[in-house]
Image (cartoon, rainbow, N blue to C red; front, side):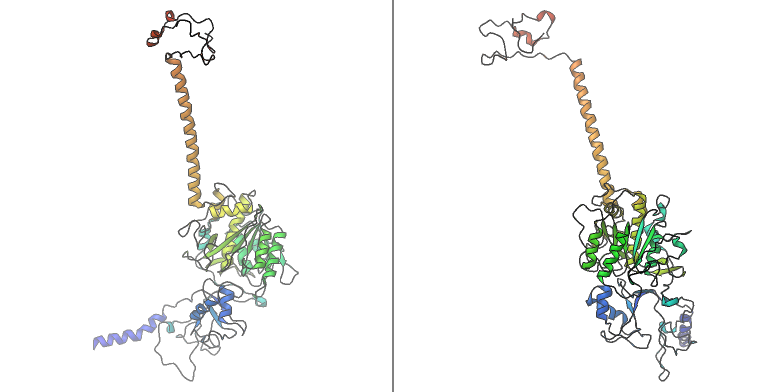
Length: 540
């Protein structure tokens, strides 16, 4: 009876104990359905680069209650307003990062402590009699900020700030700010514009261009993606967020609503950035370097001394570098999460370097301060900032040499150099500024390969010097031996009538040389009479 009473007490107390430890909703990538014509197959093709991955989207969202109370059961039928959880490698217009927006129905009882945040209450006509689970008794967390809240005119204000700043520690730019801060370098951010009013940018945001309307400035941003990229590149202040906090930002606005733009429009944006004199171009969300129009624009940009930094494509191949000695370069970036795993899927061999792309801190628009962001475009921004540091520290380097410096100094990841998935490894801004490649402009050797190559070069120089010293020593020894040792007696050559130049002796005359003298040391009295005509070369 006592054991039964204890078990009953534990069962009754269990819900209360779970409720006392509220859990915070995780941060995820998500997309809100904007059109009734959208399907999982279409979204998989646009956001993941592969229609077959519609199965991944269905698996993540099937059975989850949506804001209108509906449930995804048919992959071909989506409703406007439904919120779809996305895989980590999703990228494109409309992709957001943060806690899922609340999905509670408007009639939800506000004082129900047993209903989790975002869940839909059971209908009042048929109350649920199911036993509560640990998930169903977690109270709502009312202090958590809303994910991607909107400000005036519906502009996105951003997600909550991550608890750690792991990306800045990995990139390690602050260690060399006494040597370079990006001064004199212009970085074009081709995305949704940049909020130039933020004090962290000072007066370093140019007016730029707005290609959405075809007129106006690019130093305004409603989506926040371009501002967050610029923040990772060049945000300054007492505690700079940017990798190159003194660099100048050239905002090229190609998106203001989240709707996808054509490849031709994006190609025009890249041409504008190059024509405006950008030293580094950071291509934002939705730029597929394998798109024919964008690939052609990149090929033209590479004929100038410009470093184009872009996300590695999900499929296809990037444009080849011009074979005419051009100094421009294309650097393809992969995004990784805090655990070091790739946050997106890239074809093997296309990634040059990787950089943090998940759980990053940057700047929000409209004075919202720091926000949390995730996506390939933010990994691109960090690499572009590192490139600005190198170009600031070494202004005479070409874009090709800057690319080689960044790949040469990257921290190796994976099994190869370059690795099929991680390329040359994790970007290291401090090393790129302080370490010099074995030969800037040639193929990268990497920290391991470059150090080894330098060591072999040093050994080769030492070996040449040592051989020269040994040869010089041997020459001196031989000279010393000749001057200190008595001359060796040499047997006189036999006369040859066929060659008058070898001997002037007449073979018919008697032999005047006493050959017995060759077996002992010569002396002054041993010299016999010389022939009347001495042999050639004998002048003594």
